[in-house]
Length: 73
Image 1: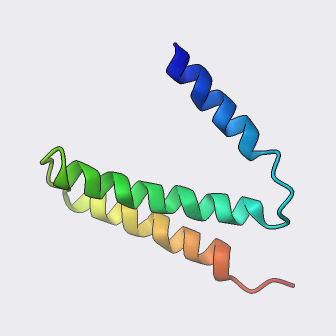
Image 2 (image 1 turned 120 degrees about the vertical axis):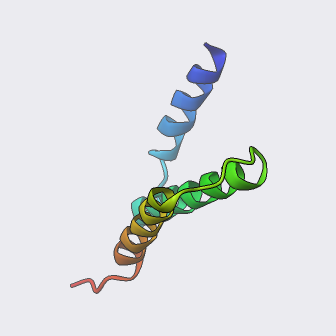
């Protein structure tokens, strides 16, 4: 219960950022978090990622790259 409340507060506090492109930075954090989660499962939990884990992680990194470095008008 308390963990859920802390997680909700964490999400709300992040939305109060004044940095103009914080949304993109936060999206990049999400993509990196996904990769680190796959690696954590592999290294710590000894759960070897399968092909679909790697494909999903790669898709996330591609999406993050597009958001961060795509041309803006």
